Length: 438
Image 1 (cartoon, helix red, strand yellow):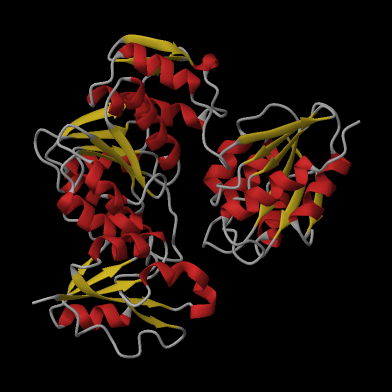
Image 2: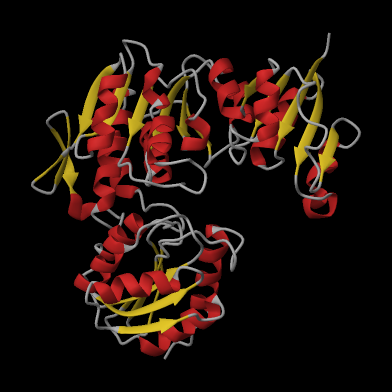
């Protein structure tokens, strides 16, 4: 009998699920977007998939399906999901299905920030070492589309968010846990639920697996109590040199990656790739060739003696603090955005005590960041509410002197003024590229 499956959300994961299940099951896609908003996205599946779209997309419920696949945007507590679960319907996800079907060994990376950077560097080290390795998930290829290419001899490297980990019942062979702080409190009930979701990366490991944990982070260290796997704490910087099992990799000064906070990400990648069989020469070559990812402390340009950096991926105070602390030169900071339930006290202190000379504040959180900075004793210039990214960049240009750094590190979500952090970063880069050069 043909299975009836529901796919909640028609983003990248939803489309990946549709491709996987075509011809194997009767598929119904649920999405709150209208057909006009989806545009051409559904054309590939025309006459093969049923769509329930628009504001009332869940009005008929989900209890008649055999399996429901939820995208990360759907909370497990969504009423229609809860009712279906009570009636015995199986709840799954693309990530969960991938773990069930994947023949390859998996390296999973989680943490509050740094996941993408670390996962990408692990992949590049293993590629340098001649391993058959694939980067998948939130960055890289959609996970299910990867399955035909995977074998028992290959590796899949996955960046795993709390949304994807929340209901996992399997864990990767190598689990990497970076620094963890409170985030996504607009999604999770509280910090405890957020951290609890993250713990699934180690909970279901086997005794011969590895948990690679940030030795300097209390929360990450606590995961050692939850796994039967072997534990390796990464803290491989000594006297500003990187090491892999007492072997010198090289000095931090050779890194192309900006920011001291990235040292831990590099350490994590060295350890995970080393455990996966990378040799020292490959580790060295890949680590010092790696320039980082777009929108993560990305140097955009140097114009008239002023450097411009795009750190649009910064959506929390902690990441903005790390960005500020990456510079000694005078800073013009562009920050602010939409609400994520963040506390800006520590960010205010970093602004007041660091090299920030001018603060350009955007979006809903502008006033809260301003209050936090002033309360901490910030005495520099504050410019509020530019109407657009173009206006913010122009304001920064007017204030900037040679030797200054203009840094976009919002510390907030992007919704409202921008589609997402990528749109925000691209707009910054675009407007910087049009600035006049003397």
